[in-house]
Length: 41
Image 1 (tube, rainbow, N blue to C red):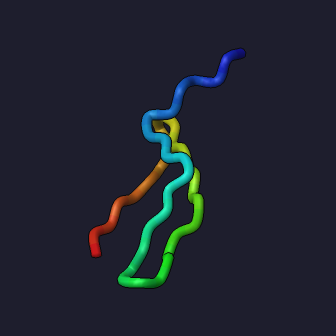
Image 2 (cartoon, rainbow, N blue to C red; image 1 turned 90 degrees about the vertical axis):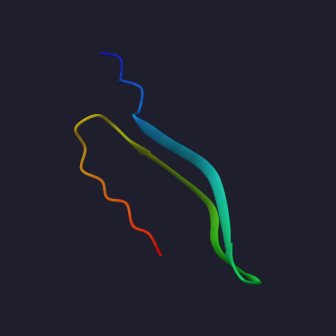
């Protein structure tokens, strides 16, 4: 059975907080029906 394409996918995300790198090459995917959350700083 073929796995469905994710509803949300992120690959190679890097993020900085001022001069400090906070995220290093983060990858993730969320499929349909999977629980997820979003937050805002």
